[in-house]
Image (cartoon, rainbow, N blue to C red):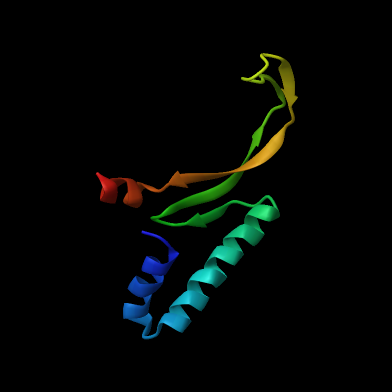
Length: 89
């Protein structure tokens, strides 16, 4: 399922594709905004979106075999909630 499919499903409840698209886009923007601030976004029963940290490390260029330094960075994480886990089983 992609965003267009999700819009169609939400439009069945909301009444129009335009309103559904706006609602989904607004929700995604709010999640991004919270994560950009370093906050965790928790949707009870669904899961938690959070920001993880990766340490700097040494990697290897597969073409040359030369060691390279990979810098530290922040990465998005998602931890599914209990209700989502049980729904998927």
